[in-house]
Length: 355
Image (tube, rainbow, N blue to C red; front, top):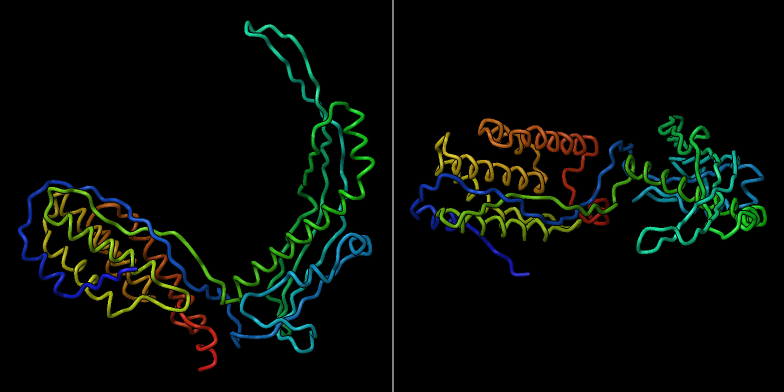
């Protein structure tokens, strides 16, 4: 990837150009993809710890699934899994209930064949089995004597459904269910147990894990008005910003020195386009403020977002972005304060070995 390095010369060059009095500019979204590390929303002390897994199930459940496989599938991202609960600071508990078949019935579908005039020339009937069943599963997490998670993953009051393939006779559909009931129910157990393990892992990793990689799509702003003198420099700056954002990795943040030229450029826009009523000026200021908010968010500097979010509000265009940006910044600040980790871009082995 060709890196575009923008310094204060970038700002100086374009500030010397004449400013065309174009009444309006179009603001466009410029999409990008980026990646960073998740941080725990409810970190423990210590933030890294060992955990074990305990799966409870009745004998009926154990006949249909491997308890060991279910336990193996449960994890907390970034933490150390141990077999002996005596060596663990956290224990994840998963309780699996029995499947209850509430009903099974054969349903009919009628299909008519018609000629070019719409006259019915034939009728076919198709049959399938519809099964309604229920399952319950719950989980908890214990850190020492403290119960941290207590959640229902599947509720017996919520019906689950299975529908077979279609058969040409009612008897064929009924026989399929009657002859394969045990195999199908065993499959239900495997699927539901796997889903329960996945849900518990997701909850525990979100609360207490920190190494999972988040990949997401986001947007910054660019403009599109060829008659406006700022069109080319603004588009160039936005494209350069997109490259820098996409170059981030979970281990490597954006280069603060390299991004300074872009920060200076976007900060210069409100001083050049000051008319409070001219739509072109208003939209240019908005786009600059928006991009500055995103820059500071992805630089992991949420404390710098509020100023430009408030300027979006005062500017009067797409003001809803003000609260959204402030909410993102507040959420990031909260996570940083809870974890003591002030970045979402770091090499875990190096970071924690240095502590």
